[in-house]
Amino acid sequence: MTLTLIIDADFVYLMNNTPEEILEKDLLLNKKANGTTPLMNNSKRRDRHDIVVDILKTAIGGIKKTNLMHRAKLSHTQLKIYLHVLNDNGLLENSNGLLRTTSKGLQFVKIFEALNFFDFPMKENDC
Image (cartoon, rainbow, N blue to C red):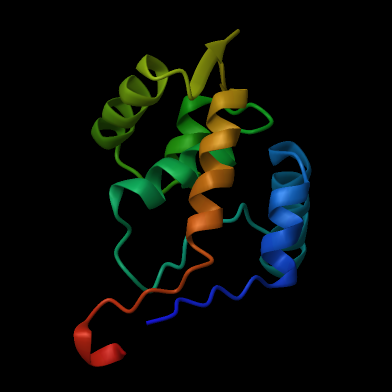
């Protein structure tokens, strides 16, 4: 059995640019498309990883906690839990009342999005 990996131009772009360059371009394209910060597809339930990436992407330039809560579509209780975990793991920092994604957080987003290029079926019937 042979495993063939097809690498498209987007994947190559992702691997050859810094997380900041990729996310800035992604933010710019998504803001032009729908006027909002990019969040995961709202037609499905988000898992924890999707929510973490939404928070990290939204906090790239710095954002207040209330604005982050609204943009990430989380309750105050949910946001407190995620912020605690992200701060403890060095993915997000709080400076001067603004939450900012750290370089470690940007690296996490880059890796997560690289893995999302592989479109795995959710059910055996989808193959």
